[in-house]
Length: 206
Image 1 (cartoon, rainbow, N blue to C red):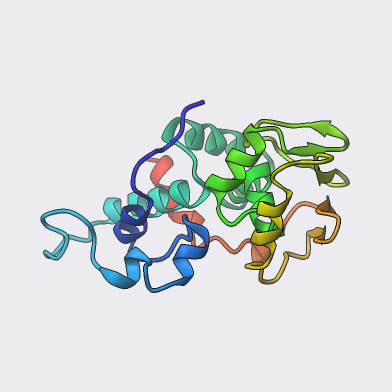
Image 2: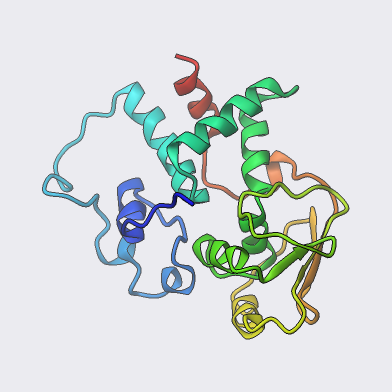
C-alpha cells in the first residue's frame, strides 16, 4: 500500500495552518505551526509570488494532505466526482469524507488519519459485521461500524475518544461499545475540511 511517510509537521507549515495530522500533538505547544509559523526550507521566510496557479495548487495540496491521499488517488477521486450529478467540488469532498479512515476520525475512534489507517490495516474494524482492512473503503448510509471483538486496540481507541469534540450530524457514535452508524451522506456545510473546493476544480479544469 502506497503511503506518505514524510514529516507531517512540515506539511502543516507548508500550508500555513494546522491540518491536525498528528492528533493530540497538534493541540500542544509542540505543534510545528505554533513553533515555526513559516514554510519549511531555505527560502521559507522569503517573499513568495502569489499567482493564480499557485493559489489553486496550494489548495489542492492542502486537501490532499488533510485527507492523507496521494496524488494519483486524489486525481481518481476528482474524476469520479466529475462524473457524478451535482457540484463537482462538493462531490469530491463527499467522497473524501466517506473514506473509512476519515470516518473513524470524525467519530473520535482515532486521533489522526494515520492512526486510523493503521487500525484499519491491522483488521481492528468491521463494517456490517465484516472485517474491513481497506482505509479508502467508502461507507454508505445505514452501515454499522464496530471494533472487532476482543481487539487489543480497544484501549487505544478509548484514549482517542477523550479528544473528541462534536460528532457530525450525519454520523452516530456510541463511545461505550465503540460502535457507530452512518445515518446519511454529509452535506457541504457539515464538512469541516479547511478547503475551498472550487479552486481545486479550477485547477483540474485547465
